[in-house]
Image (tube, rainbow, N blue to C red):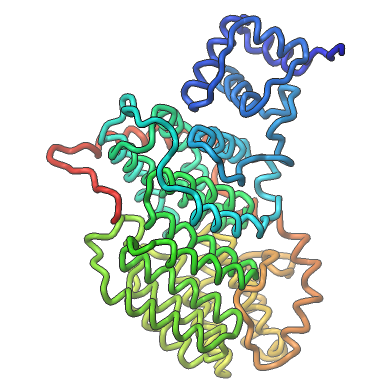
Length: 531
């Protein structure tokens, strides 16, 4: 059957100035770096131009090779091919083989950096969560591929990834996910993906490296979640979990499930949130650290509170407190040290808010704020809104609006976080029964002045936890607001999405150099995988 020539690919190849042989070498280099099995020469390129479409991940490799040569993002559809179009993207598919996971991470990062609308607009698939739980519990830990030395991998490579995660985590805590999100993606693209192509699972240093990359991917998921890009977050969580499996790191895997539970609860998938939290603490199989266990149980407590299951929530809080009391921060992975006493009190405060117990919510929120470090600006903002809500439910309108107004200032001046805006949007909804009172009117005017001129809800916030307002009218108004929320979804996600790709590339070059100088110090030992 006659094929139609691929004119899109021909035009881009001509624009690149590459010969068929030169382009074949570029494609082969990218495939080798990404761990994709592929044999390419000048006759292969001619077949593509004649209309033959390669299978598997090869269209992604071709697009990446052209992107590198042209200096601009090139998608699969740009080269006249259809595989891995965003509508059938494989980024949220749990890869069978380790080599496929490298290719999937590469695709995900490229889609993210290209800022394709689909990555921010596509809805999550709740069924993926259940599939991931099943795969985590049933797939073998050992990779079926032969154990060979990982070419060129050194301890400094592990240190660099760990340093990147710590640095960008600090940005996330202090400035919101919109600030470091693209920086994370650029480090993955520039520093990590080329090294992943040389990794063979099973060797101790390779396992450490895969663990640290999985932790960075988890951070990528968290920053995407924080700006409201929920499909993108689910994709990053999926690929992070696959690398945790390849590394044999159950503590990291449980931490990833806890993050998924947090997202599911935020989106109103409360029973799924319970299941994911249980996958976290059950999936450790005796190898989770005390802090990891405390995080997992805290996530179950949050989900049970959203379902108004007081007894189950109380049990989960008790378990979280039990495990937290046994923690030794110095022996915990760096990506778990954020979970301190302030964080535990904050999670418990959320639970009591959702159970309609404002006095207990206020007490734990106050304890959290008193013990929190200044670095955790976003967490403090969440906790202050919980405290403001507690005061509101206790009938103290003046105190509630005064505390919430401080969070408005932080959101306007420092944070890029859709979740913080969501908390503020819901707090404003809770004020509807008090709309005739002067403090409520003043707060509404102030939040509109600082964060939005149209007076509409700030973002299409999903319902955060279970409301316990003193009047039913507050619940009735949410239906009337739903259409206005959907109209502002894309606007607010983009507003929180962070800096431009060009700016991020320049920052990554600088940061990579800085991290390289700060790692591999004499006498420094690479931390082994958590037990």
